Length: 241
Image 1: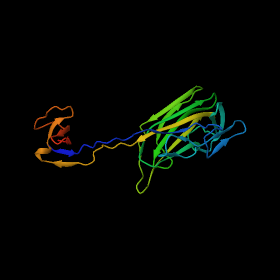
Image 2: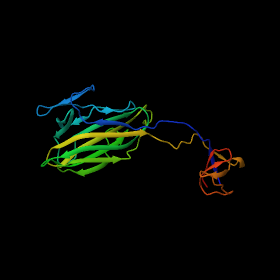
Image 3: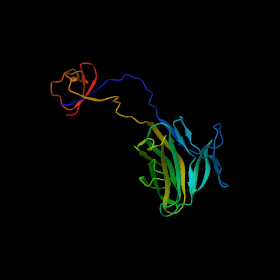
Image 4: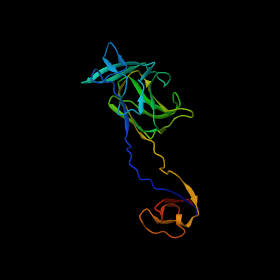
């Protein structure tokens, strides 16, 4: 049996989610760094709204895509996009993210709507520290109703080797069929990346460090099964074999 011990650390920390929302609002009280607009529609803010300062989102990039916001309610807009091809080639919407601390991307939520005679499918690509990602995370057929596409468990934004912060890129594409797709909202939900919480580890044969009870307080014998225990000093012990 090998026992790995490490001290219990008692601390309080706030592990809160941080969210970025791209919903293209109209004129309002919130300052905006970039606007988009069109003659047939209205003007809308192209920068995201954030609940914190650790996750930063660049303005959405409309690559080969015409974006025309239309008001759908007081201070709110959705964007009608055209310029899509039958295949998912160059036209794309790119959203770039920067994490000043390590963050895990818990979910990506896209609210959108197809139109009659418009694009037939939409695709979501995502990558961390990659530039433009190639990996397809989700692909769905479009219809005339409002749809909510959710992608979860996208990984931890940690700095690339030699870098000071982590980056991620989201690519949205409509394709297949005609041309035309409504994009209503993109929401990115993140939280701090969690490690094991083991501050230090040490393999020991010291009898005083041997496991004495499990986490329910039940005494264990001299040859416990692999698992997590406490020793007489109150330190956690991991039995690995």
